Length: 232
Image (cartoon, rainbow, N blue to C red; front, top):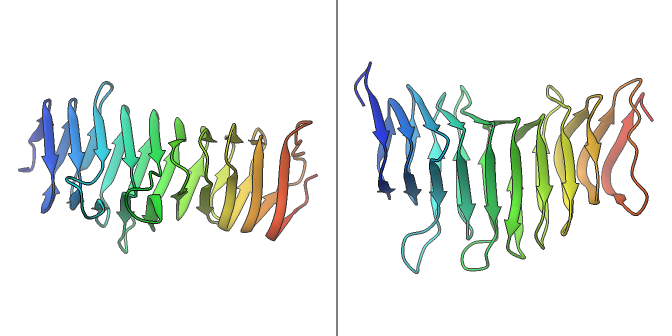
């Protein structure tokens, strides 16, 4: 896309390979099974628009990439399903800004897990929800949750963050566990953990003055990693 122009994807579009750069707005549906989105520019999913990251055909897994310094801005829906991966890599890390809804469905048709990997910042002020599949789903490596992260399906939703990021949002489960998998999670006042949750490899830190209350009937398990800090 030329500098100063915007590519509006208003219909059903498929990307299976190649590189896309420049300003891209999605008001229809982009089915994305391969290739990358590269800087400069943003990929913006507008309200009513959708990205579906899924394989095309019966073989192979969908593997898509955000390149160095590329931004994905989601105001619509991003669905990552059936073993698909959205990777983010670069010395200047790519960023995913979600103010609406990201859905993860770890179907058994392809791959060991479904999700977001690499070193991208995943800044969530909306919802990230595991909606289906008995396999694991994953969000890493730098999740920043100031919205809602919820597992509403079987299988685990495994998360990764780092000590430079605070979280004021909620982590919850109505089915399979939400797992603090690796890195460090610094919970800010207002953060909540509900349902079936586990610390399995990560460090969960509570700042001074914060109390993390686990409601009656809910569970927070520590199998490896730590729960520490000046809070309660």
